[in-house]
Image (spheres, rainbow, N blue to C red):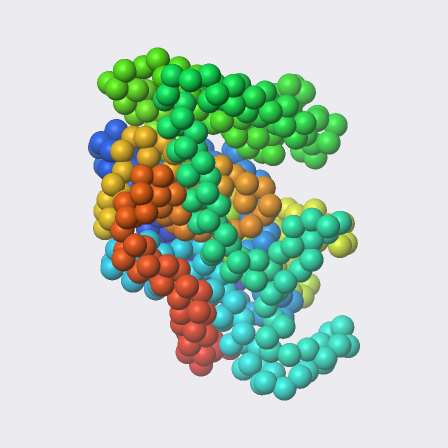
Length: 444
């Protein structure tokens, strides 16, 4: 039990470090454009990081918890993975490199699991509890087909989104920027497009709402409030609110003078920054929830017959067996609190990289980048994919830079960031493997 408590404490410390390491993701553009002071910006971002507790479910947490097969590892594996993730996060923060905390955690967890499989079984095959021959590399859940043709999961999908997340962010921000630029012109075409988009958004979101009868655990006695505050529904309400707000601005953009447009864009940047901070909190806090859930599952498996107190009564969902997940309320509350506290601490070296070194950012670019980043995070969270908020917002900033000209993006800085993205998972995995072997000497 002592080792389990240590893992939980270290996981929350990682969540805190994640907060100040990734604070730049949410506040860099509002600081760069002087919409908020640095202190105001971290307060703003931290508040919405914490508010995400009431918005998001646990889909990403489930994906992270199943990075490695929990029935074949021990607590030392998870401890080694968390320690490696903390070390890499602190190093990249010190160097001012906006690497992915998400991929650090995934890489550490997977690397320690592989080291454990090699240490226990070697490189040859072994017969598992299911009577089937397995190999050391199968301890990691590399790929699992989606149920009923749904989105597949596994480490390979997470690795694929190292490329896809920034591309989605860049494409979304580029299209939003083009939309805004055309809306500033005194022609009818952009207004027709905007009205059509508003109608399509309302229709789509209304069809995606979960009715009261399909809600497993209604939050309120009132049907209306239960539907309105269901995590699935809140996300789609937020998507509709963001799109409709930008659309409303586009309808009046051409009638504003330069001063009025800039003032309106700065107010909208508060909205886009808040939306991205919500996505950041919801996406990154869930990863730590997943690690804690995996640790409890491993503890129960390695201590058969043990009685768990209600505060540690965690059950991982299993779609194949029809088992619904159980997560005590203190775990998400602690995780969201830790990441919000970390965001309050700031990460000023990375803010400088994100806010000015990639491309020059104005309020116009800030609104487009943060809106695109937020929509990308909501979309990937809906698919239960743990993507990097760092990669997403970086891609979004590059996308708005491309609307000006290709040379507006400082590609030398961008290439350095891409190398950090590529190396994060393998370095974290190798580091976690080494930490596992060292810990195994002292912890049986």
